[in-house]
Structures are given as C-alpha cells and as structure tokens.
Length: 382
Image (cartoon, rainbow, N blue to C red; front, side, top):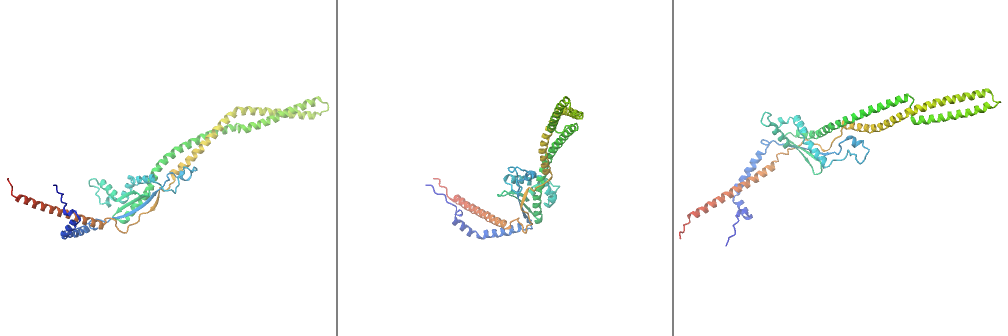
C-alpha cells in the first residue's frame, strides 16, 4: 500500500510554533539586528527625507471666451462656471506632462544642480528626466479632478514647484490656443478688410449716381409721376379754358394772357419732368442694381464683423482653464522615507529569510544522516 506523504512539521501550525520556540534566540537576534540596521539605513544620514506638496485642480469646459460670453445661442453656449469632465481632465494631464512645462520647471529651479546630476556625465538628461518623473507626478482622481504631487528634499521648493506647474497650465494652454486664435483672426480680418473695400467702392459708385440726380428710384419715380400728372392736368385744364376764352367776346385780354402764361409754365414743367423721367429710366436700373448689391454686401459684412469682433476677443482676452481646489503649501514633516514601514518590512524579511536558511540547514542535516545510515546497511547478496 502507498503511504501518505508526510507533511513537514514546519508547514503546520504546531510545527511552526515549535520551530519558533526552538529557534527563538537566533530569530530574536536577527530581528533586533534588522531593526537596528534598517533604522540606521533609513535615517536622514543615509536617505534624505523628502517633503510632499499637493495641488488639486479641476479643468474648465470653456475654450472660447467669445463663445462663452457673447453667444446668443443658448444651446451652444459654454458655461464659464462649469467643471470639466473626463475629456477635459485627460487634456489637462496631457498638457501637464508636456515638454514645455517640464523644460520651464527644470530651468527655473535648476533641477540639474538640485538633483546633483553632473552635466558632463554620460546621459545627464536621461537621469534628469528620470528624477523629474520620480519626484513630480500627475494623476486624475476619481472625482475627475487632477492632482499634482511633488516630492523634494526642500519643503518650500516642493510647494513652489507644485504651484508653478499649476500656473503654467494656464500659460501653456493659452499659448496653444492663442496661436490658433491668431491664425483665425488673420483669416477673418482679411475677409473683413476686403469686404470693407468692396462696400466703399459700391458707396462711391452710388454717390456718383446721386451726384447725377439719382437719389432714390422709387421715391423719385413716384414724385415725378405725381408732378407730371399735376402739370399735364394743369396744361389740359388751362388749354381748355383758353379755347373758351378765345371764343368768348366778353373775356378780358389780361385773363387770356395769364392763362397762356400758365399753359406755357405747365408745358415747360412737363418738358422738364419728361427729361427727368428719361434720366430716371436710364440710370434707375443701374442705381437699383448697385443698391441691392450694397444692401446684400452690408448684411454679409455685418456677419463678418461679428465674427471679426469675436475672433479679436479670443485672440486678445484670456480666461483661466482651471479651478484651483487646493493650492500646495509647505509641508511640516517629511513624507519619504516611511521609516516604520522600512523597519517593519526589513525585520519581517530578515526573519523569513533566516527561517528559510534554518529549515534548509535542518533538511540538509537530516538528508546527510539518512544517506549515512543507508551507506552503513549491509548489502544482502541473496
């Protein structure tokens, strides 16, 4: 029959307790030594303490100043007081991790020297960027805010770096948007100026037509028609009266003379009005055409002007791209290293390692004894 394998005594609770009691002195000695050594190694003499400063920001949803403040369409208007969501937080993280911010922080605080990196050594910038990444981190929180966390041996510098990165976020994002806004402004400004010149040319043409007596086709046409009707009616009326006066023997000569004068005046007025009608017919079509084009261009210009004004605002004015929930402050105590955790892990690791060595030695000793007993047994030839 097959026998069940014997479980080593040190793998069950009773055996573990027995093992601990049996080897308590070496294990205790190792634990004490581990505590002493790890306490010394984790002290400021060997590991410089680092202070942590944290800033927490919420992104905004506003990208365009004009769209947020001047847009009359409520469905598309951005609320300048609204907190950004996941996409805005991801964009913020991308900007915070940009080379531009990293370069500015490294230059301002001379981090190459601060991190004790020899610029003449091999791969100095690789080491610098690695130190930067280890000491400065950005993380999106579960509430869609962004946390800037800075560790440094100088508590005040840690706070200053954290707050400067927060401020640089606005600077860099504004710079990126301004470059595009200025390009848009140039395009709209070019269209604006071209339309302004076109409207000026149309107005000059209409001014020349007005100088020739063409002011308003419809009102002038109505006025001339009314005057022509009055003059023609007066002419016909006075002409009839004159026929009657000339057939009558009792009419004074002065009345006939005055009637003839009115007839001549009405005839002259008709001649003038007929010339005006001909001039109106000749120039009216041109005037109306230019007037309609001018009115159409003015409507187009009004839309372009609105775009131009908004583009100027976007290119010249700024809004903050973040809400600062917590500004970084100078830490009162260090956050790294966590000495009790180092001591605890080192002590436990030492005890476990020591136990493994003892078990290995015990097993080796038992194995040697077993082999010796096998070698001393007589060999049965039969």
